[in-house]
Length: 396
Ligand code: ADP
Image 1 (tube, rainbow, N blue to C red):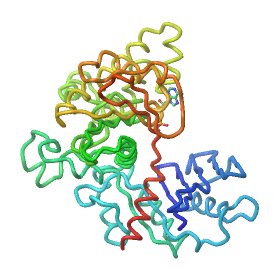
Image 2: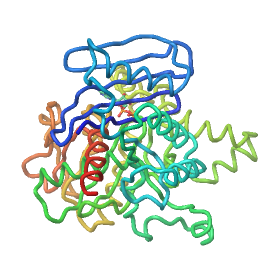
Image 3: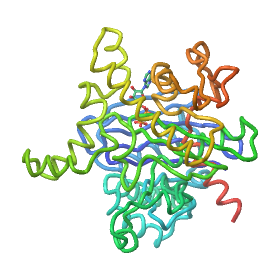
């Protein structure tokens, strides 16, 4: 079965075509800068690689162009659109309604639109991707895989804020969590690798957005992002955890508007705010040149992560493994070493040599005496979406 996975953002469409159950990647790519000048299209198969600049005015044109490449006599990987049996869509916010991957119908589309109140930057482009895919691939089943679904298992004790109850019951103000597809995929990989029936795992998704999940027996029981992705760890340009009193001070005393505070906290803070650089590779290069702010930013980020490891170990009453994933987690030896330093009380000991090696698949970087396994597992969100879509269609 060929499954096209679509991750539709505000100005981009990332895609992969996968063959299931073999889990073979047939092609992947991205239409970027949609609706902006000089849109980019990248397309890659085993045999071909294309990168072109063109005009893509909207998602319809972006996905149309992707479909043309899939069908292209020279570089294409299908002969007819009907070969695509399923289109799997990543949808960021499914509220409390969607705890599972779901076949898309008119009601589901309405709900995805309605949840845009909670995640306007994500759900509306996700919705646009679904509408366009329905038009372009009318014979395919459309499936929604929600980033919040994995976190629906978080118990009340961890998903409520200590605010007046009616904000929870009437207005849905609670922890929803994000990056669920990634946390689910790498935690399952870790459980398989460790061969454990019962397991206590902390997954660290460290990319531009950063989040951590406490995964007990395969289920998310706590997570560092909350009602929105703004909270928790220090990220590329988001502050993570913040005293809400700072917001009142910014507005009342320093004259910020609420839009400016929103922009400050989500787009100007985090690593960018601390150092002037958002990309950890730039920050690591600066550390090499003795830049103290950059060194401190890494220490602050690692310290925040360590605090969450402590909290989640307490929440699970134990810890079998921690898993690093995403751009920083998979690649930054420095960040991994900073997180694992002086954590022997928690049974975490890094093997410095293994931490410097890079390999495909699950990589164990803890020392032989470490009570807790430290793993690096590349996240494969598109594959997880395809697997979930495949399981849904087949189980029906
Ligand atoms: P996104 O959340 O946008 O999917 P990624 O998972 O691609 O982000 O992660 C992006 C982050 O990963 C950036 O901060 C980048 O600097 C970092 N990163 C990627 N490669 C490396 C590397 N080799 N060393 C250190 N950091 C890296």
